[in-house]
Image (tube, rainbow, N blue to C red; front, side, top):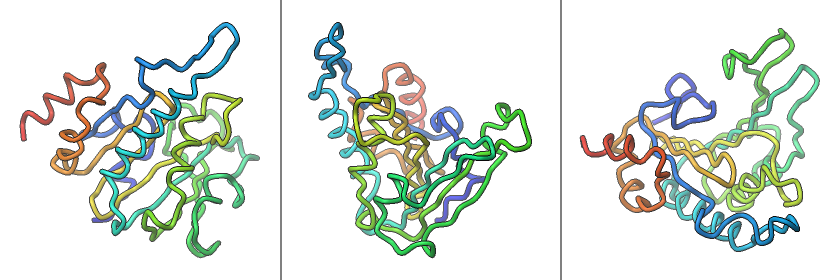
Length: 213
C-alpha cells in the first residue's frame, strides 16, 4: 500500500486534515517543561519522558520490516532551500543523491502563499526501513523544535510515512504527535495500546471514531 499525497496531505495539523487519526500528548503536563521558570531552567525529566513516549508510539506504528519514507519540508521565499547536510538528512543512512528526491510544492498551506516565489521545499528519502535512519535522533530534534537552547533541533516539518501499513506520523513539537491512516482499522491497535496518552482535547472525537469499529 503506497501512501500518496492525494490520499494523505503532508500538511500540519495532520489530525485535522485527515479523516482517520490519533493525536497524542507527548510532553507530560504533570511533569512540566520548567524546572525553574524564573531562571528559565528547563526540566530534563520532561524532555526525557517526552522522548520515551514518542519512541513508544513510533515503535508500535512502525516495525523493522515496514517499507517507509521520511519527508522533510520547509517554507521557502524563493531563496531558502533544503541542504543535503541538514540535520534530518544526515540521520538517513542511504546513498545520496539516489535515495533522496527534492521537490517544490505550492498546494501546501496555499492560503499563506502570497507571492509566486513562495513554495514549500521538500526532501523525500524513499525505500527505507527503520534501521536505515537514526529515528530517535530525529524524534528528539522534533521535540526540541521550540527551544533554542536545546540541540539538536529542526526548523522544518518531518513526516514518517509507513507504506506497508498506510499511515503517516508527525511529531510536531514537544506537545504532541499525530498519526493518521488511510483506514481507521489500521490505527485501532495504537489506539488501544496508548489510549492513556490520547490528547484530552480531542479524546471525545477519537473515542467516537473507534466506537464505530
